[in-house]
Image (tube, rainbow, N blue to C red; front, top):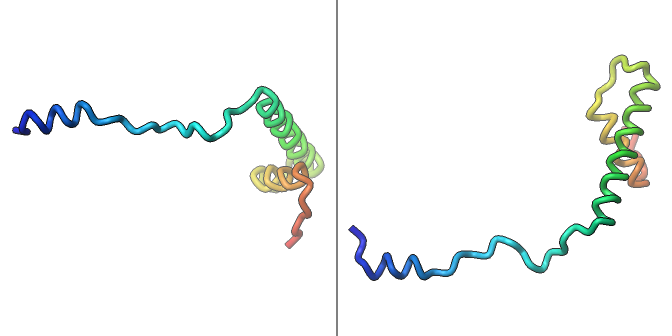
Length: 78
């Protein structure tokens, strides 16, 4: 059985703050930007699949390529 002073000490210990107060909260603008980005990626991936008649291919690859295109990064066609 734990000694009473140990139990009292544990009750009085500060609980760790799990919220990082320095990190910025998501603003309405950033949420809207993420929604717009998601929509652009999903639309690009859809048209990529449509272009091949939804035959073969890989929907994950379509999504990843579309992410790169939306971000404006150069594609590595290897």
